[in-house]
Structure formats: C-alpha cells, structure tokens
Image (tube, rainbow, N blue to C red; front, side):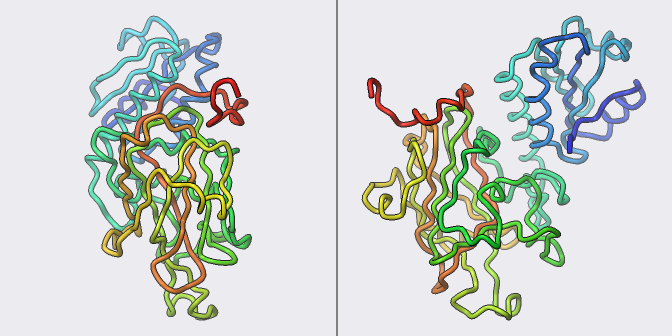
Length: 337
C-alpha cells in the first residue's frame, strides 16, 4: 500500500508540516512526462522510509494547488522539496533518481539518529507493524541500502518450506516476535533452516554498492515458547557468518567451503540487542567497495540445535549507479570472457 499523501488543500499541507518532523513534497503535473517517469522511484522511497510523524512523503499537483507551488517558487516539474520542522532545506529540480535517492536517504539517516531506541521497534526504523523497521542505529555517515537488493534475484538454500522465503528477510514491518503475542496472520515471518543449521543467502543488488555493515535480527524460541519441538529442533541464532562478494549465483555449500570468504565473522552472544533481537555485523569496509552481489553463508548457530532462525536482514552503506538487471548474469565475469 502506498505511503504517499496526496495534498488537496493548503490547510492539509500546513498541518503535515507542523505534525511531521520531515516532509518530502513532490510537485508534479499530470501532463509532465518526467514526473511520470520518476514516480515509481519516489513511491518506492515512500514505501521504504515513511514513518509516522517522522518522515511524510507527499504529492502536490501544481495545477490543482497553484497557491502552494507559488509559495515555494516552483516553476518547473518535477520539483522535490524537503522540509524539516516546516522549513524547506533541500530542493531537487528535475527527474534525477540518484540525487533524489541520495537526498532522501541522508534525510532518513538524520531522522534515525534523532529517534530513541526501544524494544517496540521504534529504534531507527519506525513504529507499528506497517512501517519500515530497523533493529538498531544507522551507522553515522551511511544509509540503509536494503532496498538496493533485487527481490527477484534473491535465493536462499536449505530453507524450511513451512516458514518464510528469502524475501521475508527484507520485508519492511517489525518482526512479529516483537508483538505481544509473537504471531503473524498468514504464517511465520521469519526463515528457518531445514536439514541442518546452515543457510546460504544470495543477494544481488540493483546498483553497485559499498557495504559498511549488516544488521541481523533473530529470535530463537525457548522451551516455554515451543513445547511441541524437541530441544535439538528449536531454532538458534546465527554464530559464524562468511561473506562473499560479486558472485554470479548462489554458492553451493561444498563450493563455499572451497572458496576463501571476503570476511568471516563470529557474532558474540553479547552482540544481540535484548530489546530488538538484532546484532550489528561491522565489515572491513575497504573490501566491500564495489559490490554487485553478496552471498551470506550462515555456517552455524549459537547452540547445539540443528535449526537456525533469521527474522530480518538490513544492509547499510552507500548506493551507486543503478545497473541494468537484465545483465545480472555478467556479475563477476572477467572482461573478454
């Protein structure tokens, strides 16, 4: 469902400027071709980053709301204006998706730094089950680039079919484990491993990105929560993770054992936030500068179970120029091959 607010009056817009800390306004016209071209990118940002009373995305038809357009000097479409506490702070003229993405994501990072951490999912990522949830603080100077992952290319090996899919890990809403009843209508909103504790996740990106860090959210179930399962079937949190970059496909488990990872990480028990069930995995940033795909190999878990559980994954860093996804098969190929 779209998070965009269509402005129908000066009074409505003034109210939003006073009630929401940040407001992004898209001044457009129905007859404007570039407005139509950039609309999907703007809507995607709205769906990813809208947060009640924090960041509000609006659309303003300049033909219908001429007074508002005149008040802010809008003479060309599209024009995007960012407001902070009612005052315009940034203006983007023209259909420039990269510039719009960069400005809005820096805005979201500023909003995240201003939000207090809490166990109800308001930490850095909005509140309620309908907003975009982040389990920890956004690293200073970087943005949440999770939406740069290509959802159509995600692959997850050794997934138990009765739980979620690879896309589940990148969903927006707060994990159901943080709700009072810990349940979600329509089935589990997490993934679990199947035959053993290992999971292999392939994440292709829509642009060449720089990856600074990951946030991994996991809620292992205890004896009192899952009485029907034997102890060795109750899922545990990830412990050892190996990361590979710029692969053209998901790695097989045997294949991964024969390749040196770009980085291997062991998540310590104290790294898991007690409120959000999230651990931050800091990467050697210099080794993740031109990343077109990421393979995350969950090698083992923190315990003796044969099952591993992951609820959410968030990726932080810098997004670059968008790639043509039809050429995904060329990822990692050497020139001339």
